Image 1 (tube, one colour):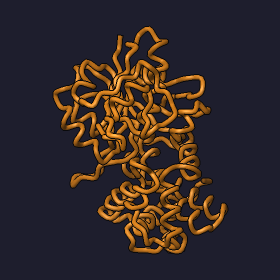
Image 2 (cartoon, helix red, strand yellow):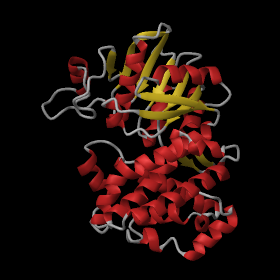
Image 3 (cartoon, one colour):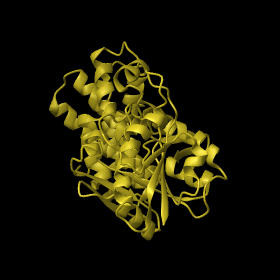
Image 4 (cartoon, one colour):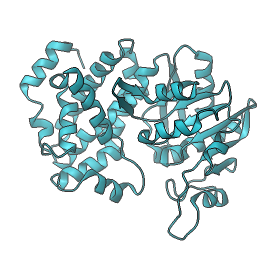
Length: 360
């Protein structure tokens, strides 16, 4: 029977553990117990977070009020948590993944499979590296991805949601991941396009930052819809420039347009960006993240910076006015109102000439 470990225990990591734990009890080919690696923290009352999770069956800091399942075991020791695991679910902030992988080199069971629920990328001198690729290369395992219109708290309350597993070649492995995550309220499908699925999950956070600026400036729904439309076009164009094999159809799965809509309407990136614009850019994203997210991490600002580095390196900045503007605003180099002003006619003409005028 396959043993499952969740590497990460934030808001989404805890929900993932809850989903998986409900299925391992029912599926004969999985071990009942689900290990969840917890980065140990001391709570205000002096208790260790791991101990409280195991005593109450609840992540009181990142998912309060939700029972995870009695078969979820929190473990503060990373090496012990992954020991003997056949299936590894990675769901930690993307900026920490390189360090986590380095700690796990040589500690993973031979033949183990991985899946990344992480939205982001690493930018190195040799070029951008997707998190699934980082995991595969450093740990020498096959790594699929799961992305979708997944606001964690809504899934925790068992409201209907969808997600997409992206895989490469190993369809039978993808089907096992679908089986492990699917519940009556969480429907998962698989597509043979790991890069497309992962880039959707990564890039939509940049668009959500832009949507938050629009909300903070009270520009209205028409402006927000325009930002989302342009954002989708830039997501598709950027993905295809990096990976020509990316499929158009992937953008119409849950990981694509559905996730984009959800994140621009209600995600944490939109929320913090709205506050940034409301304050006229006078309070930093770091300060607002600490105040509004209570320990959760913001991905969109860092991803915008990483994508900007790629665009700058390749001379593509003018072809991606929205992505470029989000980074410049986030770094304080432009005012929030530039989310519309900076996407000027010249940039749009260049964009149209390069990529054509699709019906999107």
